[in-house]
Length: 232
Image (cartoon, rainbow, N blue to C red; front, side):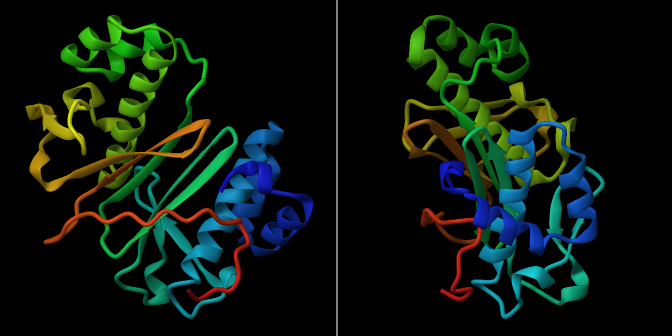
């Protein structure tokens, strides 16, 4: 959902959906853009999940693991429904799946974060070699394609910052990307499917998924944070 579409009426509607802790966090933001991103993504996940189960958006409850990954409260008795969230300048995203290991991450293509300084912590040696030969928008796109795919993988694993992402190496020369994991990752790269999407002209979105016994199929949907009818 592009935040250009997030008008005052939608903001008010989303605010009415928030739980007490979500409202407290909303009220604590000092930055207006960060506050709107949080509000939009919380409204988006609630109204989107209600498309798949007969639960009103305001009645969803959530918990989080010790690394902060959110999940549907077990007390609701919902099975076979999992999600991942991302929010950034100008865009919020919610990935929904029938399996637990799903992750999404979004970044603006022109984000100014000092790529040369970040590269040693994010990119593998081979990725850095290619990165160092690039310039301009190609360099930005290469870095943020890798960044979003790796962040999506970290979210899907649900282990927070404990993973050394430079040990996750992705070959972007093939489509879809192929991953190779160092021993420190302690995972089988063949379990994972990675996809990079351009859902707007301004953003790169990464998806990482460990799909049980099937091929990964992605169905993008542009929507609003408040997106009735609740059932597809």
